[in-house]
Amino acid sequence: MKEKETSKLYNSITNVDNRFIEEAQTKTRKRISKWTKWGAVAACFCLVVVAALFIPNLTPTVPDDEVQSDTSIDYPAMIMVDNRLYKDCGKALDLPVSTEPDGQIITSCDTIPTENNQSNFGIGYGYRYGEDNTIYVQFDDGWHIFVLNETENTVDTNGLTEQELMKLDPGYNAG
Image (cartoon, rainbow, N blue to C red):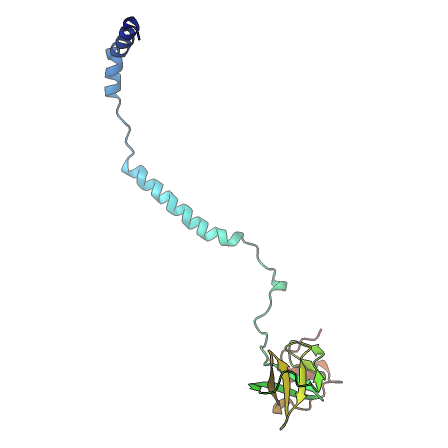
């Protein structure tokens, strides 16, 4: 730069009017009071509490007529064959998986089976007649032992009224 330009720049920097300097010194940074800080903290806390109370109420709810009751009964695995009801005893039998079944489960229900070749755990499973009032049912890559249900054996539900079915099966739902 040339000397003339340099001196102009120097004069402009150093020739600051004293009133500007005094004004800058008298202005101080405004302080935030303690009460303002604590007020902001309290407001945030109130906002969190209100959100916690009202956000769960904003989620959609299931109408009462669509709510499933908790009174449903969890039945053990059962099968009806020849009008006799058999219940899973929880034991497996050592038979080859390739053993031919004597019959097959063709229908399923959610409660106690009421028809021949019906189960409450699914369809398509093969079964074999066993010894001492047992049936062997093939599922989960093995044969499982089902024993004759002594309390409800040889129940013929054909021709029973709905009231009689309700007494026999508390989970029966007339539909």
